[in-house]
Image (cartoon, rainbow, N blue to C red; front, side, top):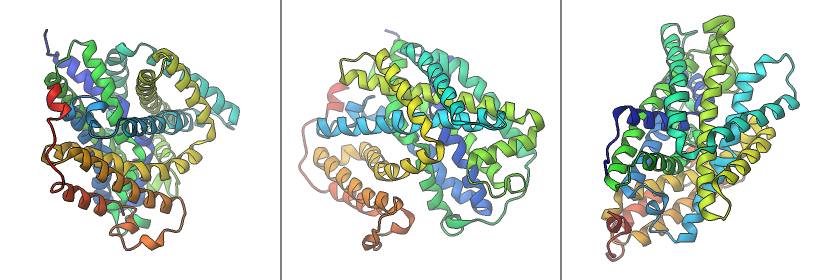
Length: 437
């Protein structure tokens, strides 16, 4: 069987992955971070790119290295623990946080400004329509690469290129002094801000969709699958970096048109209106609607695919269940949803990071099963302390931990444990990875 793809299909695959990643958080967080970072934009942006581009790229590569599936990635964990972790991630990126956020951001930035006085009924109606469209496109699972990669994403990318060109050619202000935590720890603050995109969680699960799209194209061999997964990830990473750098610079030069704004959506909206005049809102609406819609489609599809593999309920039935749940949760409101999600991200992001790093060093571990279980347990334990801190609980007793003040108290214990596991345990039987290969 032919195990090669045409260049146009490879590019479409990369565009599809880029579109899945580029959603609500990717648009609203960089402008605010750029404005607050001001003259410290470069280190803050480097930190942000680390978690918002580097980690998702590394995660997709890890999936490819492991064998192309969640089962391969978590082969050294107890099956129930791996399933619980997957379910939690799918709930977070699906109906609980990330997917409803796409509808909320689309409403706040693309639709709400049209109304003189927006009401809750407007949000409810828009949520129903938005997720009905997402359900429609998610319905034909095997056609995602054509719908997303070859139709919606090119239109989205053209809009982003126009915006980026305008931002760099005609910035609407000069960089101001850094504010808050960006004044003293811009790199670390940018790193943590990248958590909000949730893209590392998304990468763990979008890999399943990419593998499915490859199978629809007749790519079934592990080596070929890994090669095209990595190719798609690199294309998506380049696109994301381009968008983030543009939005960071937009935020850093926004003080003249959006001074004192409390969220990136307002900054972006005011900046675009300043650049393009009366037509600015139309340009922004197209970009935001397409970005949020493509991500919503990817999230609903990924969640439905996984949950249908665990239950007797079919993929299409799960598409409806997830779409309806997202529409309901979206009515909570954007600020409330972001506030609720932050402690959860602080608790689970370090675990996902540890899982990815372990995948790359697995062949050097004397006892992978022991190492995976101990390292992930340690990362979760210390990440919960950071999560409790951002949730407002008093955990000052742990302030002796390095980088505790930055919200990264998990880092040293996790990687110290990881290093220790390189010297602990007996060699095990050949891995499932080798057997599959």
